[in-house]
Length: 125
Image 1 (cartoon, rainbow, N blue to C red):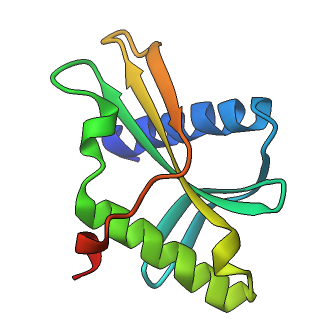
Image 2 (cartoon, rainbow, N blue to C red; image 1 turned 60 degrees about the vertical axis):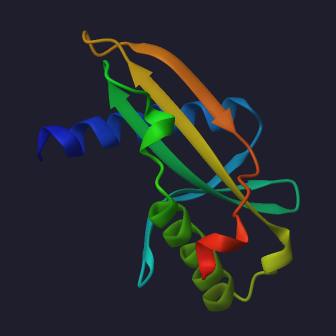
């Protein structure tokens, strides 16, 4: 496992713990689809929540800055593919982002859970 993979796996474990403590039910992790991978799939009441986890160690920048329009499009495509495969209601879907910034020591410096990412129409043209 590479250093980048270890960092990602650590971030996903931290995010999963946070999500469960926030009252969401984790359905699955690392769901692989043709469109890409869903880091965490959870339920929040009747909503199916597709969670992207971004983890960054020390400056420059923050983990939130690493979510590109292309990654957001892939996350949306994964959500829609999953709904089609599992016959889930695409109107009951939410995209969330959990950003984890680490100190150089590897300890969590900050974490932010952004619920309900908006997907601008221009991302699909």
